[in-house]
Image (cartoon, rainbow, N blue to C red; front, side, top):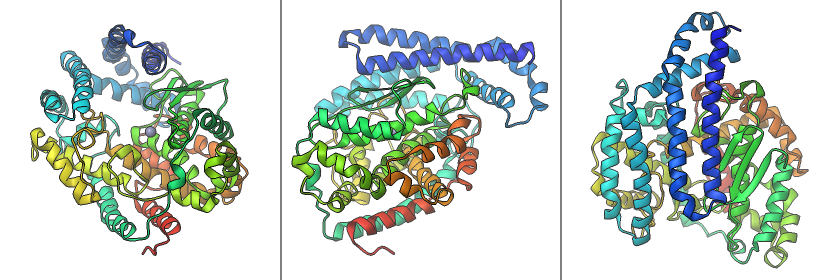
Length: 502
Ligand code: ZN
């Protein structure tokens, strides 16, 4: 270990500390901070984020990365040492391309846009939000101009969430999803509706929490390194790999809180199982947004909406909510939690229709970035696609174009990662099932150690060592591929809706 590499590790550790302190500030704000703390907290977060950014673009870091070029060339590329230099250099060079004033303006306009979104949504008036979107879009164009042109300017936005992935990678995947899922949804719509009335009723929060904690403990939740708290929007946060915090909300009229706990556990476990040798480096976190979502979806859907899981947990669910489920057969419950039905709100959508919510947003973002669609026409274009893909007509802007926060704070390029995560989750699942032939038996016994260990070994421990494309290939054995996901959804629909699916 040279003096230069030691100094590099120290600078990267400082940066990691700052970013994780920012995480704690956000977690605190969402869970326990009284409302009047908001103004001071915004200043505190801005200060920490500015310090972290300055550390990342610092001249000293640039000089060290230059000095380490020769050392790096002599190292095994997949070693921790070489990977840390490589990833740090990429992060550093990318951050340096964006002028500090532009970055600050993007941050400021994002928080203004979000405030406007709360008001615009409350009044269901898109015109309140529109000027903010227009201002942000000008800034986004300047941001895109900071980078070398690729085939499509949208690639720059996508790269912020999926490093190295482009529209040329995403388009063929989404084309397959659209081609296969639109007719599948049509067939479901024509079939006898699945009875899901057992999922509506009275679910006391205390009982749901008791059940959710039991499931989490079986999954591998350990109070020595995990916490669960309540927040308006569920999320997972990792102040360190041994300090994992997930949040949920128990709404008493459905079981959403239980499924959101399983979802956030998947995010948390990814952070928990990153190799300890990568701590306090930029590699000590999940590889990308899509890979992160593949983990949350795997635990929520592939585990948590599967038969083996409920073969184990259904008696406990009946015990938690006897009035609701004492007389409901497991099979009826299983079909209810897997019901496919086009609906208005993305976050409430089932596994099949969810992807069309994403694809229509991705298409609209592409059209906005290319200039084919003007922001003032976004609301109408959104409604038209909802009608075309899902046969659903948003009754107003609040539940239509403004139902998600993403566009109000300028997070263009994020939406596609949700469906990519679904696709990857099933690629992983097929691989896992091929390697662990008795996985179902493990799950039926409430034993998740073998699954946790597989994910740790093949995916989690690497953190950001490899690019998303490399990580997918290493973990699943093949490049990004929608075929396993389509197979899975068709089987699920056949199994739960009772309709024959080609
Ligand atoms: Zn998620």
